[in-house]
Amino acid sequence: MSTQTQAPAGSGRPEAVTTTPAIEISGLTKTYGGADTPSVDNVSLSVPAGTVFGFLGPNGAGKTTTIKILSGLLAASSGKTLLNGYDVTRQRAAAMQQFGAVLEGSRNVYWTLSAWQNLLYFGRLKGMTAAHAAARAEELLKGLDLWERREESVGGYSRGMQQKVAVAAALIADPPIVLLDEPTIGLDVEATRTVMEWIRTLSRERGKTVLLTTHQMNVVEELCDRVAVIRKGKVIADMSTDQLLSQFRERDAYEVRIEGDLPELSLPPNFTARRVDDTTIVSGRVSDPQEVYTLVDRLRDQRAVVQSLAQVQPDLEDVFMGLIKGPAHD
Amino acid sequence: MTTLTPTADRAAPANIAQRPGAATYFNGFRNEVHKGLLNFRAGWREVVIQMITFPVFFLLLVLFMGRGQLRDEFLLPGLLGMVSLTFIHEQVNRAFWSYLGDMQSGVLEQTYLTPLPSWTLILGRQVAAVVSALPSALAVLLVGVITIEVRGGDTPFDVQILLPVASIVLGTCGLALILCGLTLVYKRIQIITQFSMAVWFIAGGTFVPLSNMPDVTAFLSRLLVPIAPGLEAIRDILVGGDSLLGLTTGWGLWWVILQPVVLIGIGVVLFGRLERVAKRRGTLGRY
Image (cartoon, rainbow over all chains, first blue to last red; front, side, top):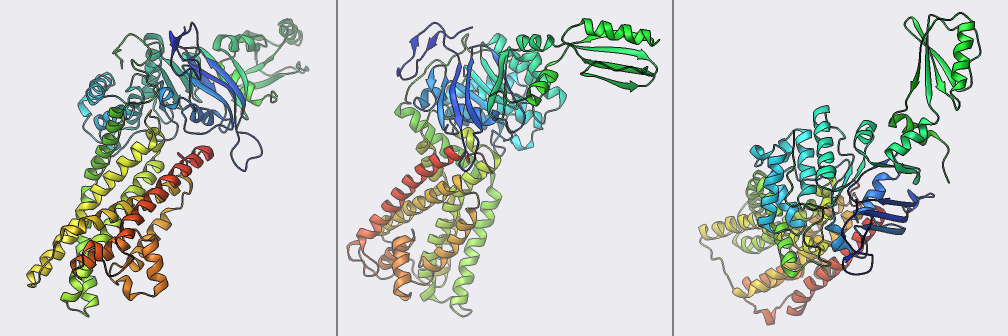
């Protein structure tokens, strides 16, 4: 999916261009004063409009730094960031109208104010008229089941409700891009599910571009069309979620269950055995499936009772862990 | 299940302006003032306590100065000093804590995600802080006036004091801008803010007129302390009977006008620079 009205950086106004990424980052580098190594090192990403983009990485990898540069909250050392074609640094006013953000680890909204007051405040902060902000706030609060409690201070809400208000504040101006930095952190299962449904609705029904960071791989696997993994400030993977999973599927894992103890035999490299109750599970990765059949034959030769042989498909968490534990890609 | 009903069948906002218009600036400013006043209203209990404690503090000070008696010669000059001190204390603290509180809670970053330039919001915060400082300062004034009147004294008023009052308000805003800018970068700055209040109390001429202080102290106070020239002028007018053009103490009318302008100028420049430093260092949301 692509946007219809876009603004090439420096043009001063949007022009009709066929396809411009909703988010474009090129050569982004950020080195904090006093640091030897950059927190974000020559990162380039392109996020097509209308997609849910998972931006993953371990703590301290550079995700939040990248998002803050995208939001104009942090100045980059070098590189360029464009939101719907607007340069965040040089065309700040227009760029700020392209997105709403829920930032990680912060309240995002005023707890002393009510949900209603917060949404009106952030709406007008985004340049909306009072009437427009009120109409939009009403719509959002009703949609998020907060309408009845709109006059209560946000500080008195549950964590999930507070996060709902934060998301509503990010959406108040109906921005085409939504940056969600750990939106489900600290939420219970139900609230997490609600946030996931919002993200799905925003993308699939509203055509929004969502950039999402989270450590919950099930959320990513379920929602994200595309994933980038950042480690030590460098992007080490950037592809569609399916591609990422299929790439790792080439190195499929297998699991052989045998009854009782493991007979005396040498396992292939990358294979381990563990005892679970009355069963021994022998598992590992192979490059050629024939190696597994050879292993099964050897087990049978040792009179082991093979209960099952199964191909273990890697989930995104396995892929992610494999990526971030692997050698750095320079 | 939560649903989000679209208001429009598109993914982009209707109006993408390179720069917001004047009405948007004004609405942003008004929005900031409104938010500041809502926060002020939310903390009304604290305001009520301050409206009691500041006047009590004033009366106690005058009692101490009068060796246990409310003496007329200390009441009016002391009242003028205490009203100014209460104002600067409240204004600076409210502006300062609006920034530090927002940083600590993590909301400050959200307030930067706006097409509006930050000066619009800063101005709004300052105006909200000025308005929020008024109840405590007016409570001191009211108690002081009642005390003077009950004791059979006369509370003078001269319209000429409006200019030095404006000078105090503007100078205080300049100081608040400097402190707010510093807090964007340096997290322990509240120590300086609290310490500065002691300085204003001692060196601001609030209870001991600058003319009774050592020359160096009086010079530095007139030069740097936002309330000092204005307060000196108010005393000259209301107690000494001077006119604005013939102020007998201090450096005269020109400094009453120039000092707040200089402080505001320094505040604006410093805030802008420190804001850029904060964006470079990533301290807007670090606490």
